[in-house]
Amino acid sequence: MSFSRTLQQKLQPIWRKNHSHPFVTGMGDGTLEKEAFRYFMIQDYLYLKEYARLFAMGTMKARTLKTMGEFVDLLQSTLNEEMQLHRDYSARLDITEEELEQAEAAPVTLAYTRYMLHEGQNGGLAELTAALLPCMWSYAEIGRDLSRIPGAVEHELYGEWIRTYSDPDFLKLADWCIDLLDELSEGKPQHELDKLEEIFLTTTKFEYLFWDMAYHHKNWPV
Ligand SMILES: Cc1ncc(CN)c(N)n1
Image 1: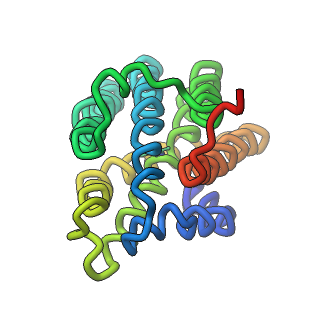
Image 2: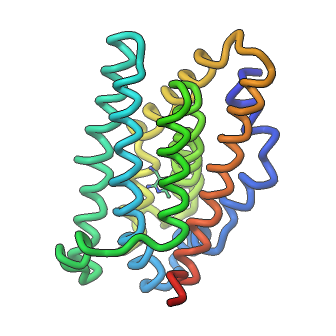
Image 3: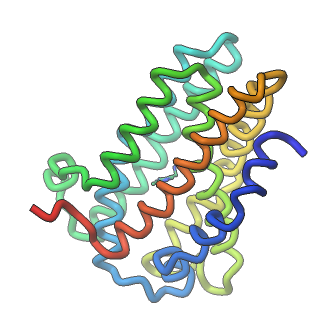
């Protein structure tokens, strides 16, 4: 089994918890509280703004023109397609442009994005890819699983979210990241593979914290 898939298999208990978080299942059956989704959208917009920088960093660290081009595609798709979803939802959720632009990152959003940027900046392309992969991969799987629930893609509020993340184009981008980590990890010594695993594990756990933060509207206590 490839390195990425071995990691994902090893982390199945956490991976399953992400998939079965009430925020995720609530989008699937339509029971998620609209206020939690609204809060998620704002925090996720801030998250994506920082996440996109990882793709810019990836472009700089890539060795080949082909890989540079793929990172540019990921950057483009995040800024102009994925974040467009958030801008479109803002209109429906009464989030003004000002509120979106001026929102403050909650502790989990800040910690998650700073962690990824730190690993991306201080490590090589493999560390950067290990940091961003759980994000792409888990959303592609969640989108796919939710889209299989009868009626979920037609839901008046959550349907658009599910359609976006179950789109074959999003899956293709996630697959490219999986293959890239496999390629970059090939022939690495064990201590470097252990570091990649640690990064992958940490961002997988941050994914759980992000759902949980949104579900409970967690923000700074003071
Ligand atoms: C927190 C989080 N993780 C992943 C994704 C999918 N790019 C996202 N939009 N937000």
